[in-house]
Length: 193
Image 1 (tube, rainbow, N blue to C red):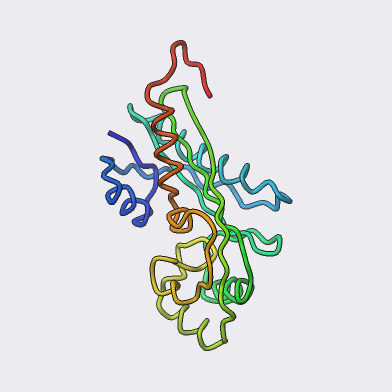
Image 2 (image 1 turned 60 degrees about the vertical axis):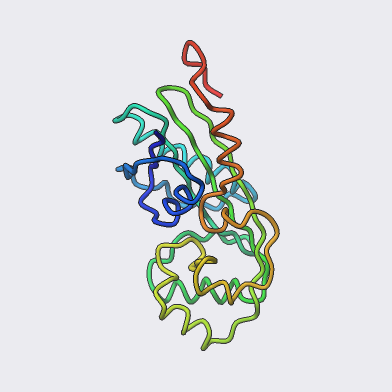
């Protein structure tokens, strides 16, 4: 059985929808800080996912899965908003623009590990201040990278998407299925990929 190193109910829902058996053990390790990487966002999300997975893999036996998602718009890396004011700022920046959603995935079993990422482009409609205020009032903006949930009321804010939809929710299922098929069992003598 897969061990999900995440408290995210959205990731849990996606795994259930895909028919993947799992149990949840939340990582104890704090998330690595967001840093401005100038085009190296894939490295950031892979590193953050791997750190979370490794922190859980030290305490359990089994294959541990972790993910980490950030939104990048005009060179700004956005994680989860700290408060309503930050959520409003993020949504104003996303309004009328294309942005990228990066999700890093990591699988860890003993010393064997695999990390990868997915990137999806998303375009927001131009939003009025009242639309932003109304959306922030739904409470959906919190606990989500970029301050929105595409699978919720924010679906009405999105004009277009190019790439993997489940990536924008926080767990790119097609990429995960490829990784699980390649990961199978750790190679002999602890070789890592």
